[in-house]
Image 1 (cartoon, rainbow, N blue to C red):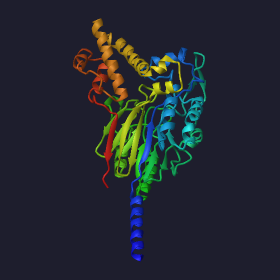
Image 2: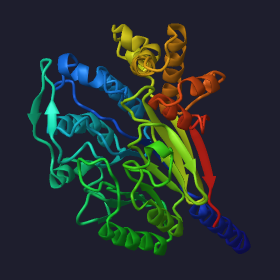
Image 3: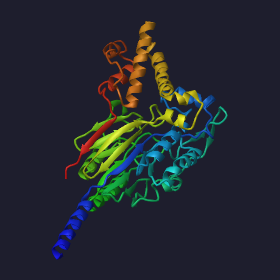
Image 4: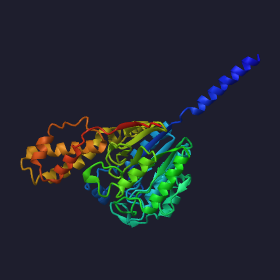
Length: 415
């Protein structure tokens, strides 16, 4: 009997150690560049419509409230552990937009999802406007302190360390992973990104603390660390990116999440994978699912299912019920009209001009969406030859240097 008890205890003990040794995985969703305005303060008509639809960004501001509701509904059903938002959460930094956004996001937190947010260049201390009744009027924005207070429940009250002079912070997941949320802005309201000497010193200290604790870092910021496109380097990539890349690599960081460029794009360096998420405001309204642990991670970009949401709420709006086509057409037409006007100064044949405008619009949609699978590129060589010297030619040429899908990747980390 005594021998039986000893064996039973050994089995229980072995099982306990096995359970403790079992690696914990984090279920993370990341989304970026929401550019939320808030329908209550921005009538989609008159000046706001004109400014948005002609500036080439392709932001779907008319239905962004509905699209964000669709995303939030998906998340409440899916229940990831974390949602990471990497900046440019508002259209133009209006306080009204920030308030409306926190009201949209609050049900996620109340359901038990940890939401971590950081600022982009469109969120703080810049001339802010709202666009009611077909016009526009200046309004108040947020200071850094007000931003921290506004988003207290979205990362800024739960961190284990905060950088004193910026909105950077570290969040400990308790599962062997620390999430570093870096405020990469040079100055709020400016396009450029960099980590100041003070931020570098703080980051170095916190990465060392992470290592000493036996944890690994997952890092997020607004600007890119690695080069994604030669055209989108200055103002989009950190000014001191090489220094930051080396620091992250030395600390064992293998994944960096960011936005700012609006394109769904992945660059896999020797030690670091840098992923730009597609702007949520732009079709097909990407977010991504990440399974992250000490031994590695997987990443997969998804498109928000607006049609499913429209059916679920029994919407009668044909644009939402047929959104996969409506959203594509809006973004395509936005690029098509600009390309056609620009190329008309070089291409005089009307039939050829139509084909080139169609080609550039399709390539543009594919680039921002992160997939070239359905794009016929056999027309590319002729287009680049005939459109030589135009802005669209150089833009398309850079895109076609990497014409592949950028929706998924993974990395295994060796101990």
